[in-house]
Length: 188
Image (cartoon, rainbow, N blue to C red):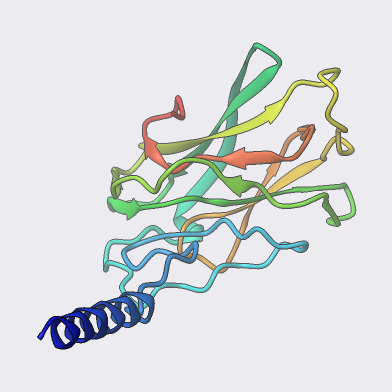
């Protein structure tokens, strides 16, 4: 009787283990809701739009990008990346913008920003309002190799395949990260 119970218990564990391994869960870096963007590949590529983008989703042509003030401390630099709704209707974004540094000829410098933190909630942006993320890198002179200073940033708003170009001198040292979008212009 013990052998039969042990056999049944082992069989049940194997079935449960196999089910857990093949649950179909996808922990890739894409979102199923209304956004995601940052791609960590060697070249800048536009993210694929999700099939569940809301009807009020912000499109690239409704947005203007800019950089806020850089805050420095403990060998780190934090800069707000601001996306402002220039349209006439409220729209929403959720997730991480895709960000790459670009030289004056439009060639990408180094790797795109990687994602830092977890994806936040959907942000509703009123006309003239803004959502922001934070760009994070090490400060120069802290031991990490710095890429060439950009002439521009190429930014893909979440779930958009068209990019926004921001004229800005920005240098990433030891790579750089981008956080999820939050309401307002201060980043997170």
